[in-house]
Amino acid sequence: CRIENCDSCFSRDFCTKCKTGFYLHRGRCFRGCPAGFAALEELMECVEGCEVGQWSEWGTCSRNNKTCGFKWGLETRTRQIVKKPAKDTIPCPT
Image (cartoon, rainbow, N blue to C red; front, side, top):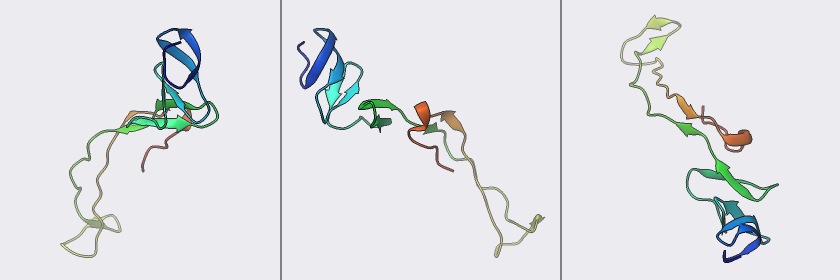
């Protein structure tokens, strides 16, 4: 195996198990997972996290289900989940 910090390989260029303290990601071993990926501690692997879309525009101001003026109300906005996390590793934001 020619992969640095690898304990076991499928082929010389693809790791299947990393040495202690390293996370497996796409056949390589890393100290930490790349951006957008979460560390699955029990397997020491990097898995895809939650991905959300862009925020919507702010909604109208409302209070007690009525449209309000410029104060003392609540405005909301939302964003959709684009990709759910693998095995609930990184929960999606509210």
